[in-house]
Length: 64
Image (cartoon, rainbow, N blue to C red):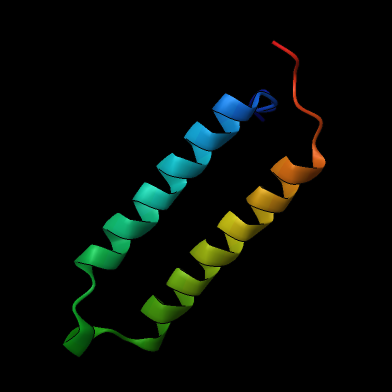
């Protein structure tokens, strides 16, 4: 596993990158061709973002 992200700046950067990836996936989905698996994948991505946010909120940040 990689090194823990403990600084608030790194955490915000990480979340922005993950949110950007989510938005890219969302932009590529064509509503008329969307299947249940696609929606499930989007829900899983949102759940992962939520879990990571909770992790970051409970983790003490490094003092700079």
